[in-house]
Image (cartoon, rainbow, N blue to C red; front, side, top):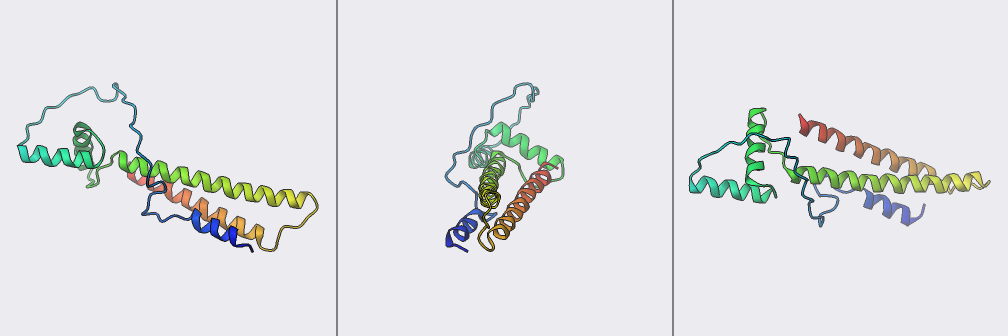
Length: 152
């Protein structure tokens, strides 16, 4: 088997802890004013305000969104605050997986073309493509499961 296919397979498998597109600037979500119609006022000390503002800035969300997310997390029995950062990471992972599935599909189409034209694929080529496809589909399943768990 050629080294190119092996190189491509190693690039398709990124570490789950490393974002698929580390240089991607997160997109701001469009605001839906009908979703949140109630307003709450909170009194904070200077120190509390500074800490909360820093935490919101670190997650690239507004203070109001951070307070709502943190409050809802505690109300729902979680200690994890879900913010755009987590959603953006999931979007990036799904985009990378879409690219990987497309590449594997292209490889399988090329193998089918050779076979349909009366030729024979190189030994191990189809097995490698199918193994890569199964690995990528397992990553798709893991990403979907992760999103479902975070939603609960």
